[in-house]
Length: 105
Image 1 (cartoon, rainbow, N blue to C red):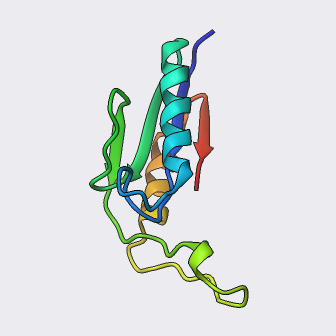
Image 2: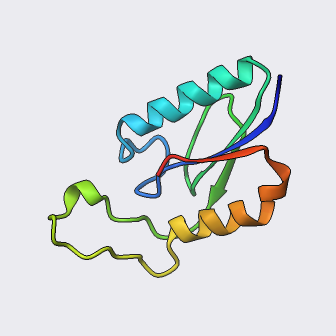
């Protein structure tokens, strides 16, 4: 069985920066393993991201502030020209091309 999968990366930083923490490694290992099993995996990530051997679509925009660096009572803030919103706008435009979209944010 094979299918087309679209993975949306974390919006807190570009892949390879380390800002995404363990998510970066999890996303890469899962995408690589599923590609080897015959799935067609593409990753959407902030501009300047880098992945080896995985098709990558980079999206421009301002990074999201990590919730882990905020206090419990801090309001949720979406920056102007947010990469999170831009990545989801892209995913919405191409959703009919994929069997599954996974949000790693």
